[in-house]
Length: 126
Image 1 (tube, rainbow, N blue to C red):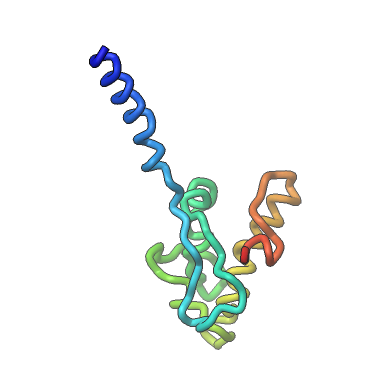
Image 2 (cartoon, rainbow, N blue to C red):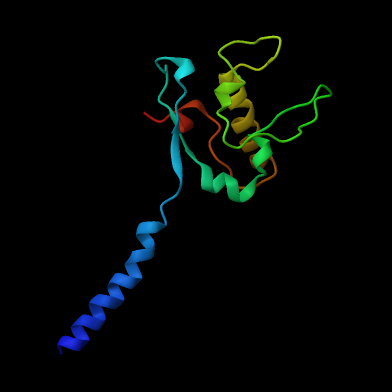
């Protein structure tokens, strides 16, 4: 009887153990450059995006002809994109996020595919 109980407990532990390690790599997009956020930060699931799109879609560097030549995956968006447009960078940070996220999600929806949110309150959840 004890052996059966121990086997059941061991089996239940081994069954549940992977669930503890299967958490999605989700993070909140907060950038100090914004100061106090006007809307709640966006919860972003990096793993889900990593599985479906190329890294250089977000982690990008463009050459003088406008070609995406890759980028540094460890680099924060705010290292290139500031609060306002500059000669070096024509796309401010807020607009860069909206272009990347909304454009991709809207494209998926237009193609009849499952997509992420496209409305303000769907991303910036209170």
